[in-house]
Structures are given as structure tokens and as C-alpha cells.
Length: 453
Image (cartoon, rainbow, N blue to C red; front, side, top):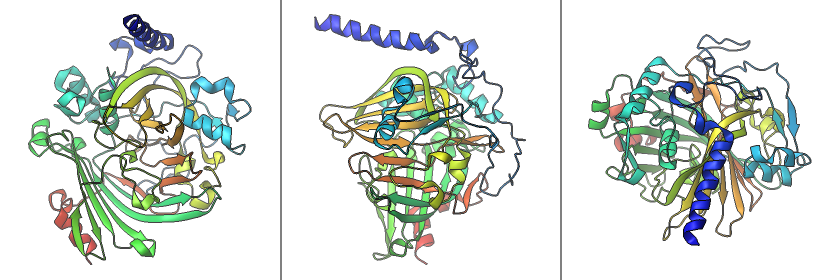
């Protein structure tokens, strides 16, 4: 009986994938990064025509200003989903979004025409092809990769581990400066600015001056980040730095912190998994940075579906918004949100026996064109949905970068939500203009020099 049940479950999963049609597409029908070239038969998802070109120049766009004007600003919603009609669209909404619609009559999902705006530099596409040709492999039971460099690691991911590495290594350019503010909104609607941050990132995985050989010889660090806090007064001068590698089994992720009261840079070995981030008021976990940013070892990861979903996309108004415009009681201002129908990979994470995490089950939704997560749902130990993450994407068209670094995190047990970064009333984002000496900047001594002033 047990064997028959397993066979039936396997058939059900295959049937689900087949029902949505994506499993039937061959390599010649897909783009180099694995997405399907064609639109859907209903015409509600268009065929891919190259994404937004780097010559895109909508009214109001000022190159290297840190902001990108909305190229679709004149469009109107095709339809709107509310709590009253959500059942009609339930199969295309994440459970977290459905929970928001159930709880709050003021929340709605305005669905606009779909634009497949993501595009890539030629160098990234060529490396994606090389990765797909067999250069890139999972090792350490999926907890690490080797050979991958400069592109999407696994177009058409065959399992949840490949999908998660696609997300963690999706293209964000070589470097980034980000000036933004972090906001906590309690259940009564009170807004608290929990941090103003000057953030720099370096992504050696996309360093065009490196080769796969030199990247791995240097330790395979794919992500270096440095935060210096300039407000509120209680955390001015605090800083932290994190390094992540493509083989965290051999070279574990490391985080350092500096607090002015101690005047020392200290290694933070507990800055992992479900440890709460202090600058989020405890609303965000360490592994929820960039929706998921952490070791894969505590969960089993499985691709459970490929389907069409309504996801936050081309979110220029959301990105450009100021706190007073975007942050309302209970949820973000739906007038500033833009939702579109896109094809996604659905990945579920299930806690392994003997492990612990405040969310023993998670579900992620990865866009087929950016291979990055736009939504996440989390369940607590009682099986109740307790968290929903919304990470809209917009395309920095002149750089050909699809950016999803800012996240809204809803805690359904407390009624609060947290906005991980808000650029609208800050200085914005700057890609690939950093001129720092990476070899001395992203070091504990470098963090000490920048903070102990």
C-alpha cells in the first residue's frame, strides 16, 4: 500500500507539471537562461522579444541618478483582485498574498499587462551557455557548486537545490552601492525607521576581469557586502560585513559586526539561519535577506511545480516611493504595486528530521526570466501560514540588471510588516560604478577603518 501511495504521489506531481505545459518544451524552444521563448496560448504572457533594451529612456529617466523612471507609467490595470473575488484567481496567487486579501479589505492586487522586461549582457549569456553545457555542477549533496561562473548556473533546474543556486547566483552586476532606509510598521500602523544604511556589495562571480579558474583560486566568494548605519541615533556608527562562497561546506559564510560601544570588530558565528536581524526589530531572519540567503543544509528542497502566477513585476512606482506614500497600516499602498502574470518555478523547502527552524516549511516562486524569487510563504510548526515575503522586480534597463533586493515581510502572527530597504526617500542604487580596492575593502580591518572614525 505504501509503495502504491508513493507511485500515485509521483504521478500526481508529473501530471501537475505536464498540465502547465512547461515540461514539454525542448531546448530549442527555450532561451539560454531556461525560460520558454513563446507566450502562453491565451496570449496573456507574451513571447520573449529581448527584454528592455539598454537604450530605454522613458520621460524622467536620468542615467546614474540612482533611480529608474517607469517605462510603463501610462498603462492601466487589466483587472483587480480583492478579497471578494480572490477565489477566481486562487490558483495563481501565493498563499501569503491570499492571506493579505483575506485579512485586509484595503489590500488589492492590480494586474497589469505582462512585460518580459529582463535582459542580460552578452557576457552573462555566453557564460550561462557554458554553465549549461556541463561546466557547472552540484557538489556536497547540493549544498555547494563548482565550475559555475559568470551566468545562471542551471537553466531548467532539475531539482530544488539547482533552483536555489540559480536564485543565489542570479545576475546583479559586479558591484552595487545602495543607500536606503529600513522600516517597521506595527499592527496599529505606527512606522518606525529602524535603520538608514550605506550598503556596498561586490559580486566576484560576475567580475569580468576574472576567469572561472581565478574565481575558484580566490576562494569562490560570490558575494561580499558591507553595511554602515547612519541613523537612527542609537545605531549610528554600527557596521557589519558578510562574505558568502559557492562552497559553504569547505569555506563557511562569515559575518563580522562592529558596535561603537565595544570599539571592536567581532566575528558573528551565530549570524545564520533563523537568527532575527536586529535592525528589523526581529521581523526579518538572517536567511530571508534577498528572500533566501543562507545554507541549504537544514531543508530538503524540491521543485514541485512550473506554472503561471501573478507576481510583483516591473515595480518602478514601488521602488521610487517614499515611506509616507508606500507604508500604510497593515500593508503597503496597493496603488504603488504592480502585478503581472508570469511563469514561475515553485520550490518547497521541508525541514529535515532532527533540524530546527521557526519556519519548518517554506515555498518559493522563481521567475523564469530572472531565475530569482519574487514571493515566499512560510509556515510555523503548527502548519499555519505565518509569514509572506514580497520581493518585486524592476529592471535597471541601462545596466540590463533585474533587481529584487528589497523585500516586504509580513508576519501574520503579529500583524506587523517590515520593509527591508526603501530607496525612495534616500539616495538610490548605483550599479557597477564602485572603484574600491576589493582586496582591502571587504576585510575585517577594512570594516574597522570605516567604522572607527
